[in-house]
Image (cartoon, rainbow, N blue to C red; front, side, top):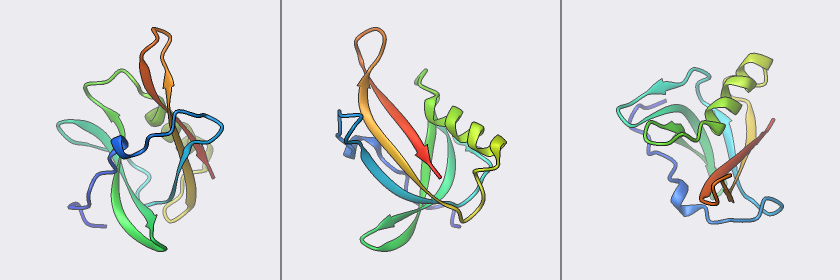
Length: 110
C-alpha cells in the first residue's frame, strides 16, 4: 500500500445517532499502527463507489484524549480479529462526553 494514501476525514461523517451510525466498509491493510506528527494511524482499504481504495485510518489524534478507536484496534489485534485483507465495518457517530461535549464514538464489526 502506498504511504501517500489520503487520510479518512471524520468531519464528513455527521451521524449523531448510535442506532443509525455512519458505516465505513473497510479491509485491514496493515495490522500494525504507525505514527505521524499528528496521530496514530493504520493503513486500510475503503470501499468507495464499489471500488477498494487505499486510505489511512486515524486511530488517535495526539491532540485528543479520545483513544476509543485505538483501543478497539489494539483489542481486535490481540484477539486475532485483525488480519491483513480481512473486511470489517467501522461504525461511527457523534455522541456526548461525560462533560456534555461532542465526542466521536466507534464500533468495529468483523
